[in-house]
Length: 283
Image (cartoon, rainbow, N blue to C red; front, side, top):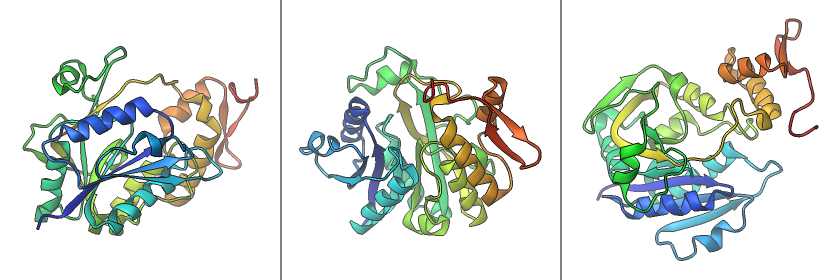
């Protein structure tokens, strides 16, 4: 009997993206045995997915609107409680390719990857492109991320670049999940929790692999660069991270905040701190 496979998705809003993800999962060469959707303070998700097959919605209500680490841990707990032994984490913005679930499942089942952290390619859908159920439409216009390798569908490539891990699309067995220990819930909201997860994997000797043939399509949504609306939680999470690992994550964002005059580095406290009111919250 093949191991049961679950997809775990966290969501707060982005309902159209979630519906498109469900279409992608239904169109896949292999459908997941379970799809666990963790609604973070969003009570409209459960009725939205009420008629979806093999889909379980659980709600998480915390003080912060985006308790991402806790939500992913809850999703994994629920999925494993239903018997899943392969966990696929897919961001709500991502439409899976037809081969994503089956490819992750096959690689995770291979002896040499059962204790591995498996990362598929994420392609970026440009603004104005709508998903109509046709993957070819997305594939023709969506470039891959330039900083990750583009692999043929039958290739798996070992990497030690754990700092390039991201939580948009990845998979691992329940054995590897236990080795990593899940996501650290000291991170509140946006930023840092996925880099911490990768460092935990490195420390636990869970090898990281790029997986060809497990492509996902990241649907467009407006973003700010740097994400000034998340400045406070990024600073808080960055301090949490440096306290755990001894180096600063999210250095590109921190440098951009510094260039914008929003933060500076205090040599006495050895910490980044705000220098001006938050541009969105305090104006």
